[in-house]
Image (cartoon, rainbow, N blue to C red; front, side, top):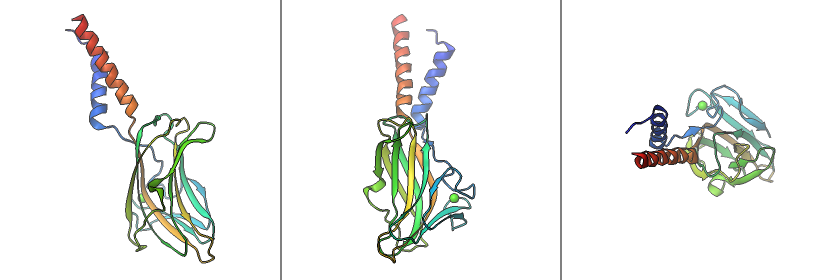
Length: 208
Ligand SMILES: [Ca+2]
């Protein structure tokens, strides 16, 4: 039986893809190691700062310090992973957070599957509730959420992190974030490769 060079390469790629689970981190500047908000779209309320806030990764972390009642301070890693993430791909989002709240203050992590040209095909509040930070504002807590890309991700995906205040005049939210990772497993691609490899193996057997 003669195995051609391209076929050998293809089956090798398929085997490697399957073996490694091939997660790709599509977050941009997820550790804020540029020293600023490069890669993040900012919607400030109060102040947003990147500095050496006792980071869990590298030298920098981000702080959203919101003292305006009834508002949200947001940062977004928006429309990332275009051409990498496919509909239905498993996605794991991890990050570290800590912070302090006045009356009614909360923090949310939200995830969107973006349609090219506008709109979303899926959106969710990760964990379905505000982030349960450690009560000690100095203590970082690691979060990990598993989700699945929506039916249309032609515009990539977006992770939004917030410091959100309530209506009470004394409401506040000061939240620190670091070490943001958006791991995508491009499963359909690897399955397609495996399928193609299997098909060619069958053809080989038939012609043998
Ligand atoms: Ca960092």
